Image 1 (cartoon, one colour):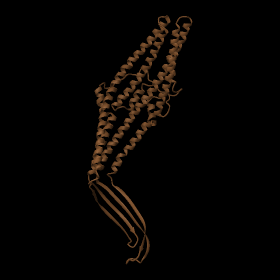
Image 2 (cartoon, one colour):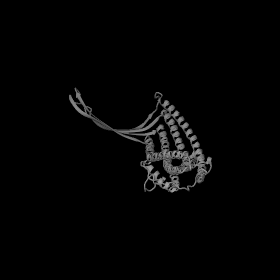
Image 3 (tube, helix red, strand yellow):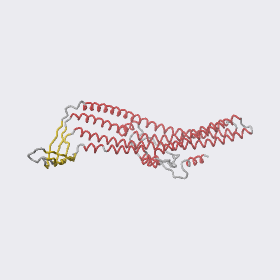
Image 4 (tube, one colour):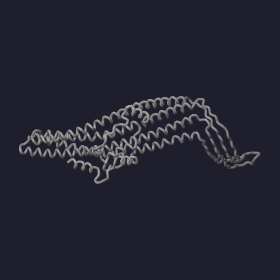
Amino acid sequence: MKRATMMLAAALLSAGAAAQDLRQVYDLALEADPVFRAAEAERLAALEARPQALAGLLPSLTLTGQSDSASQKIIASPFSSPGRRDFSDTTLTLSLNQPLFRRDRFIQLRQADAQVAQAELEYQRARQELMLRVAQAYFDVLAAIDNLSFAEAEKQAIGQQLNQTRQRFNVGLTAITDVHEAQARYDQAVAREIEARNGLAVARESLRAIIGRLPQALARLVPDMPLVRPDPEDEEAWVRRALDENLALLAAQQAAEVARQEVARARAGHWPTLDLVASHRYSDRGGIFAFEATDTAVGVQLTVPLYQGGAVTSAARQAAHAYDAALQNLEQVRRATEQGARSAFLTVLADISRVKALKQVLKSTETALEATEAGFEVGTRTAVDVLNARRELYRARSEYAAARYRYLLQTLKLKQAAGILAEDDLDRINAWLK
């Protein structure tokens, strides 16, 4: 019966289709997940901050032209006879501006470097988040398959128990209450099967939301999966690494640096600016004073801001408040990073112990069911005892399977907390799937 149950579970997702493993599903998510693709686009957009900031320090060249049509009525002039004349007035100007001293733009360039660094960190963080979301959805589907297979096996076993109890009642070997109890347990098993089937459908839809298609058959976790302890097995070492490499914390540090540079940039509004300016102009004018000429000018332009209505001072205060908010957010992320690293480390250790304990519970419930069934055959145990023992067995199987998935997810979360989660970690788990 157990072998038939496992075969049924393997066939739930696809009939004859090759099983997809965790890495294959993750590769699909890289191409299809809209959350990650949005993060990728946001990264590319943020990378443009530096060339835009650099452009403010490079020369700018502008060509402007103007052509006007004019009409002139000459009444008396020593240069021309009276009458009306139509003519055009054309001007072409080529202007060059090279900033020599622009404090705000130099600061903006450094600020752009921090923005680019933050964008890269946020992108890598989104990649790690995708790994976790894929793993969570993947194992949720496997857990739902397990629950359904356990529910179907339980229903089948209870159905057999119900038939056996009815037969024993018919020959006077058991009471009608045992029949009613078996019937009630069977009805409950049917309800659990319906719930488990719906849970599998929901889990499959959650995975489809990430990879853009319904998953095929998924590779299952091998029975002899090793329980690897954290390396190093030192809580403080993981906390130190998290404080050094956690991507959310590093991104918050860059965000604080951007805010700090913004304060300096706002205060630079009080500083003078110095530019190299040059122009070459061609003019062609008609009329009574017609002429055609070119002129070239080169010089420096100094601008000293004296008073802007308090706008610069207000902008500096605003930036200072935003910087203080960024520092507070940085502190919050730092505390959350430390708490997350400690929690993930302790949870991995606890999950290892829990998996071992539940494995022993599973063995005990299997033995207990065998003993109860033997007692029922000789009349020392009731049908209710058998039903209870069987229910405990399937509960133990479900909890043991869920604990193993939880352990794997927690190992990934520990790596993420430390900022070192990578595709290699998915490959390591893949070795335990078939």
